[in-house]
Length: 166
Image: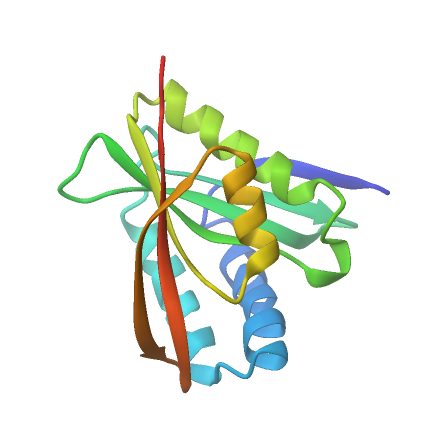
């Protein structure tokens, strides 16, 4: 399969729209989270793009035939300079379980280590068991859980973190 993982910038032509569409296809169409979720993803990416600092922030996409089929962002954690956040981590459901998510996550973790982050955190939901297995396999630990109501759904949101060692 001709899939490449590339380092890019959020304001590169079409990146925001393609990543937003990936989220829409999975979360809105498959899980019924509603149109507001799609708008929240796009809004986040536009904000991320406007404050993007290539020394502290990063974005990778997986592409097949020049179409984005996966993404992951490292977002500097405002107020916590030693902690990064993983955001917009997704792989098109048709390409899951092929190592693409692992390659994206490895790139993000390597960037965090190189950039001097001491901790990485990410938020996910308890119903995304495949993603959670990946996080746990890379050494993340669940440190918080809470019931929330987002995008027309009642969910259990979970915070995972990873302490980086030298």
